[in-house]
Length: 249
Image (cartoon, rainbow, N blue to C red):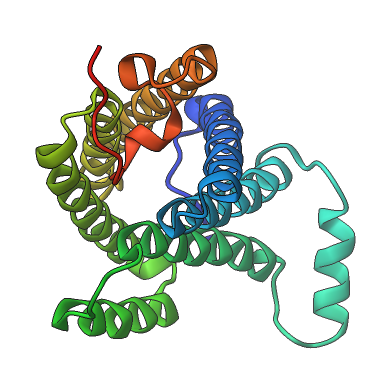
């Protein structure tokens, strides 16, 4: 039987926990960004909010699929029997492959939205990314798992570049934290490229967890100080570019 996932047996519970934790973090971050968009009408936050929302749905799809796959939670046998009875395929594996496909597709879609952000003009790399994104999304399968991680790394790297340009202008601490979180997330994707080796899969998962811990730290920082008007630049709008002039403290 072909192994559907690369997760070592002894790391299954931790893998599910990482998915649950990341889902929790990205949902909150998405809600904060969308809330700020409603207040500021800055489309940058709308793109970030919707991007993280897609990623949260992707994490939920992965979480549900893994719970059924790892722990036989839910009607997995009935689903398999229904599929086989309809002569569509010969295995319930299609259910799991579909779940992981939607996880990857929605994650890449979310990352692309966060990268894209409103731009004054379209660039050649935008058209290249759109074509590449659609192509690899159609090709994703268990045989080419590494393509997903390579694409994620490319998109996250471009997101980091965008936020570095913003940080070079605003010098806000929250932007710096966001760059750090995305940088560690990019590192996890590099490690996952070689996740066919059990220990590297575990290392990649732990590095990914660290990135989401930093996202959570940023969220808690925003929630703790967000009501302080312009004080120390802790509001969520200071994770991105802000056209307002810096106030003198």
